[in-house]
Image (cartoon, rainbow, N blue to C red; front, side, top):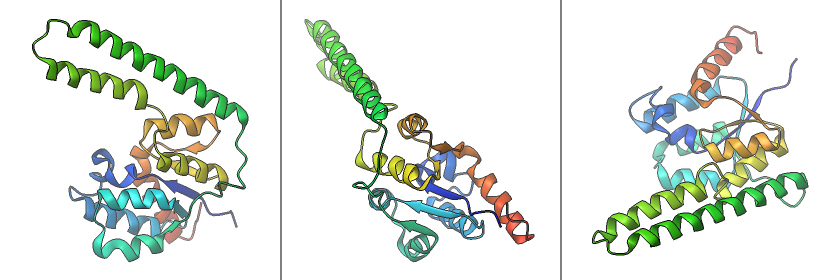
Length: 200
């Protein structure tokens, strides 16, 4: 019998409107439907504890909490036992340095245009937006993001996330990815096969 498929999930699967609205307009109803499909898919699902804490700050699961913790296994990556290629670290630092330099150039440009301008608030908003885009878009910018990538790497699992930074750095490590916009259809297909006795 083939081994079960293993997935590692990010918060975006539950909080990104483009994803959860495939189930329902209501985020809790969508989560309940998603958990039902996961439960009947025959696969295993994981989420780091830090990511689960982040999700709980964004969505009040309420009565869905026991079901969530039953269907999705909550555990952190084994950070002290996990070997990550040095090339990954070098690439990460190189990317981070380039982003910092880009952010510095953006700040310098905004300072130059500030002279004689009356609407300083508008300038600050523009600086914040461009600076945030330069430094945070497409990068691992939180411990939750790192935990998701490391857990998927450790388990040799399929990572499911709509976060551009998580997906970019997962590719660097050779982690399997699926397009999250098709996650619902994938789960439905898996649940259908399991029901018919043809698991994978």
